[in-house]
Picture 1 (cartoon, rainbow, N blue to C red):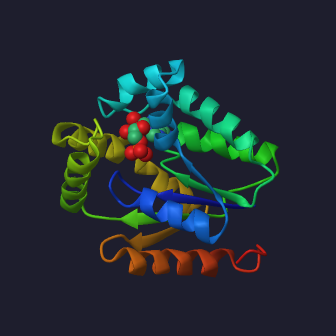
Picture 2: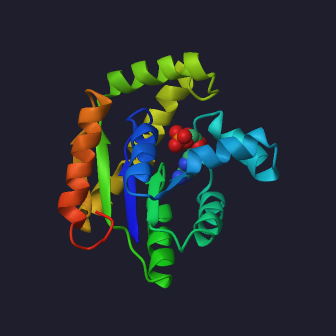
Picture 3: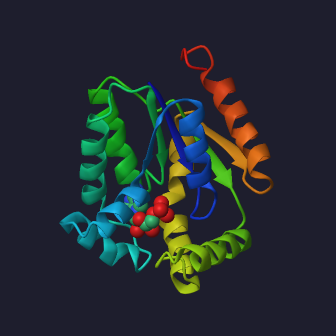
Length: 197
Ligand code: AMP
């Protein structure tokens, strides 16, 4: 399986590029944020629980995210692989995820981190909030989400770097140019291991 993690702060472009990667390499796009938003729209218990955290810009508790992710993944293990978008977001998630993959004899193929400066992130997210009405894309909540990213999620850069899995792409510029760069990084680092590339 080709299992890609697209990493980065809120607003870095993970959603846009994950969709493009899933189409190009025929992978399942797994966005934990999208799953939560769909659960909220369907007013499920999971959605109700997640909404109280999401609206404040906080992370949903690890156990809730992991249970949801594992049950989603187990339904798709016969596919080519996954693009993980917005997961993992804490060291606990990454550790438990690693063990879960090991149990199923699969692994993370590579991690691509999108680098975008904070002012640009805020501008993009405020604009997205105006267009989409996402309740967590207001300036106050955005600033809190960036703090949460810096405190709880950013340490994963070092975590995956130590495992020699981390690659960085500059995420400002045209979508096509950035996407080409992401694909170059992936093909350079996983070439030969997978038939689909
Ligand atoms: P996103 O669409 O990835 O920006 O996620 C929107 C919100 O969903 C986040 O701000 C969190 O509240 C929640 N969320 C998504 N993925 C995770 C995760 N892996 N761990 C904890 N909370 C998450």
